[in-house]
Length: 438
Image (cartoon, rainbow, N blue to C red):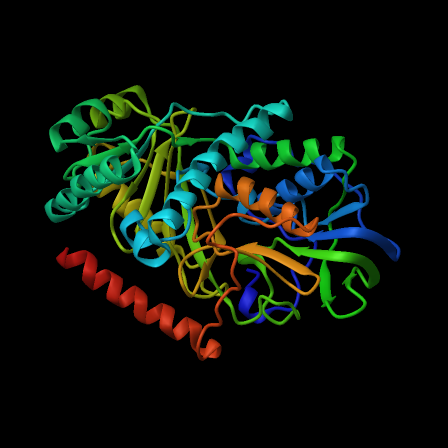
């Protein structure tokens, strides 16, 4: 499997096995076959890049190219779990206040909510059926201590941010949502929901195309010059641009020169989808909700009941791309699913896949520019909705506007970047230990 830390490019002609490919057509676009000149070149055909392209076009920029190494949505945008969440990064609201102050945290909170609204606005404008599920994002306590923390968090959000979050006791959760044997209670954010991520990225692409954006697939970028003569090398051709946008997130090749070198950690996540549940399995497990769910572990599990009655279940995966195909990672997810829902003890996996997310050293996204190269990255797996607003803010930067966000700072460098994965391995060991005692 492609490994960002070991590569200079994402080669064309790659495939993956995400469940969404079974239900959604892959869009077709031309590739780059000659040298060319554009006003803005966007590297990466996912949510961030396409949102940026849409908002550039809506502001009157005419000559925009989006370069995607494989098909549109090949990266995380087309293979994530389809969780629309009111947030991004890994910091909770109390931590946001400590880092950015109350006004900075309030600004981020407003952006989180605006991102959800903008996602729905863009998909509606594209006429895209994104298979939106019922509203609700459930955060599940994996211990009694964590349920106390969640209740405190809900009270804090109501008091400090006027943000209503429902507290759900254990018995109520098992009776009205799903009979989960490892849950100690939950809180519910009313504005989260699930969707088909590939249909969403297809909707963005069709909308961008309708606005005159040139989209190219199988357009593998191998080099970036961001000096006095900004350009990318794509399929062996020089593609010149006044400004370049890096929208590759977890699929950013470490060895390709860019302002993102040594500043992000690509992290693998694995997902399984079961065969459709029978009526008996649904009844015995008391699955009553299609709301998206995530637990409070340091090494989190996330899951949802899909519209066709399959269960999607995801969590951490291997450290390296080479290890990613080992069957132990999908079996770990299946074991956890079956322990959480014993009525599904006989359920089988029908589809499994892995994908890269991007983590910054400070565990938050950044929207910034370095000379003529602009970027937004570091969503920590929480980018489905936030990328819509991040792409809009990127577009504002590109046209010379200032943006209001505490995230408009340069990505920090990882210390000793060659040892990032050694640090990640240590973090996983610590996370297992922490999850056992909290």
